[in-house]
Length: 190
Image 1 (cartoon, rainbow, N blue to C red):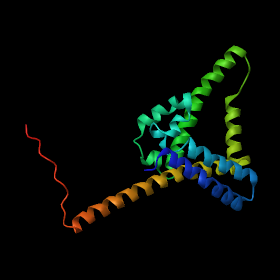
Image 2 (image 1 turned 120 degrees about the vertical axis):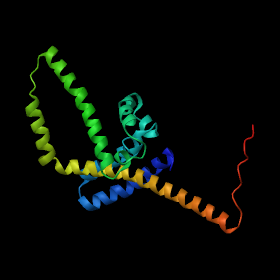
Image 3 (image 1 turned 60 degrees about the horizontal axis):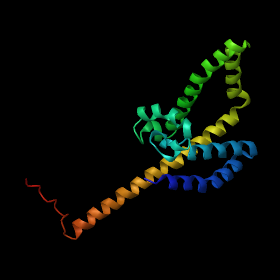
Image 4 (image 1 turned 120 degrees about the horizontal axis):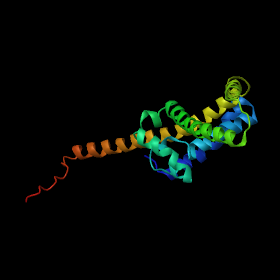
């Protein structure tokens, strides 16, 4: 499994490719910027390793505390943290839920003390309409960027693990071919 520094390098090395591919596919600078920003954010701060005490976790600084329940609920490298599409969706739902749990009481208290009027129903309807219609391309570009950043991480983990297993199998087979048996552990005699 690559180190945090290696994951960061992979993210930064892949960024020009993501920018080029994104612009080639969309022909739109804004969508390219959104996808590349999502990729960079996901690769450095919002990736699969938020399920452990990692560089990604540490980069949140004092806000890293919000990821502790996430870590407690998920096993490292589970399908829900490192899985294709599912990992990114779970992290997005988790983060958006936390934001709502903080924002709703904060707005309610502010409304109570400052006395301004804000209709939740109209706000939610406008957000849903914007996501479905007016800003659907931007939302898709952001999600694709976030997912590509997460996948660059997960794929490098999988490849690193496969490489280690392959080397271990080679060493094991090499020992069998040479006729040498592995060294025996001494017995503890009390």
